[in-house]
Length: 348
Image 1 (tube, one colour):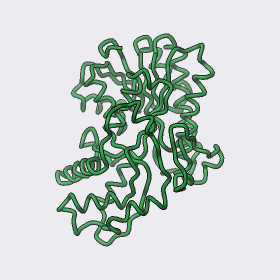
Image 2 (tube, rainbow, N blue to C red):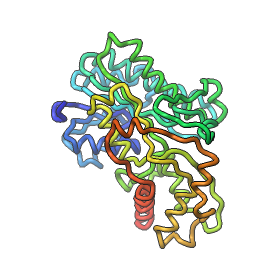
Image 3 (tube, rainbow, N blue to C red):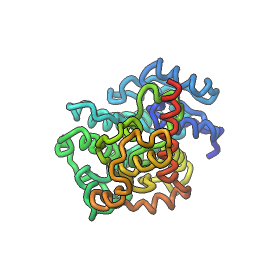
Image 4 (cartoon, rainbow, N blue to C red):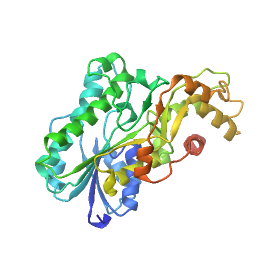
């Protein structure tokens, strides 16, 4: 598969991860068609990439609407070889979990696969769905220190049981959307020719593709870093914990997922290590003299002990072997994330 002859469709192209993916695809020489929710968002993205000749954008107002992607595949289906489905709702600002999280995630995934089946069954060869570590375990199990998650693990929550709060519902939405994709392929094996892979990242940190994106707020994972960068001395903070990965590695993994034949049919679990908020605070206080004494300190050095007690283990050695590249370490990832935030803040 040489990049020059291949067109890649990226749904939700204006998102935090997707912007890095679009950049990596263009650098590798692919033609890219992206989707965004409005003309304004699409124009903004094209401008950021200096109206790159290999990049075009289409509007999908609502990924949960029936036939949301039909028009795009009707129009471009015959040239699209690869589909990267990154669009999915990620926020906790809702009490109607079914309407705002579960249904859009599942329907968005189904409607893009249905559109491929209808209009591009012979052309699309690879589909990569952006899933999450959330589809490996329910929040309650993420906190069990005697549990080890692998590429074979599945979140045990049901459609009903995940609706206890927004976090559980989000985790459920990732599980059910991913399962919908695997089920679709099983049921339509004879009607489509594509292979499927999923990319399952933990908390995604790292710099924004374009620093000025920070002026519109940050993605949900990065807001953990932003809150700590803007914390006050002596302040208490919530000690988030879980698997982490750098956005630049997530992007690289999306390309590897369709470029490497051995990644077909695999769930690629992206985690460099486990982290907690205390680890972030320790790095901020050590590495940024302008923050020292002005931001929260918590209990320096207590992160590893906290994780030992409150977090499950994660073994993604299979994924690391399949991908074959080294992930960013936590310190470099957090330093790059915070440096960009501080730079933008100083310009404001």
